[in-house]
Amino acid sequence: MRLAEEQELDLVEISPKAVPPVCKIIDYKKFLYEQKKREKALKSKATKVIVKEIRFGPNTDEHDYEFKKKHAIKFLEEGAKLKAYVFFKGRSIIYKDQGQILLLKLAQELEELGKVEQMPKLEGKRMIMFIAPKKK
Image 1 (cartoon, rainbow, N blue to C red):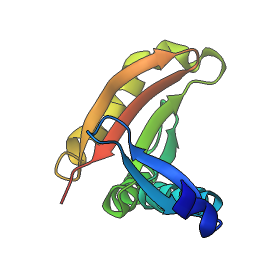
Image 2: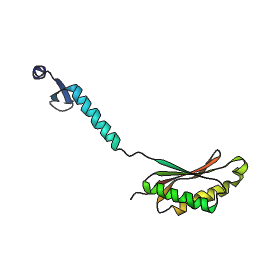
Image 3: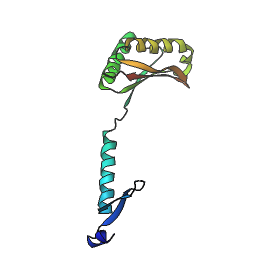
Image 4: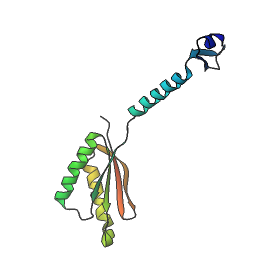
């Protein structure tokens, strides 16, 4: 403690459970700053999950389907998760089976690029399905 006071620094206990306890003479404010800096660097390196959406109608035409499928392929290759959903407007909710067939067809065609995380599920006026990219 006397050494710490002479150098005008702080005596910090590093590991209290050790016998004898390990202490270090350092500038505590600087120590905290370095620790926060390290945590921030680790946080920035953590991968962020990006979710891209593709919207279909229950009676989506073949050309439109192919166009949207190309976008889905691009999203999965970039490493983003894909949220594909069929939006039922008004009375088109009677075509639930068509919407499910459309989403399952998409899942089957994207099988080599990604795996289905959640099978098609009806939530209100939307039938939603999640596809996660496969690791390379």
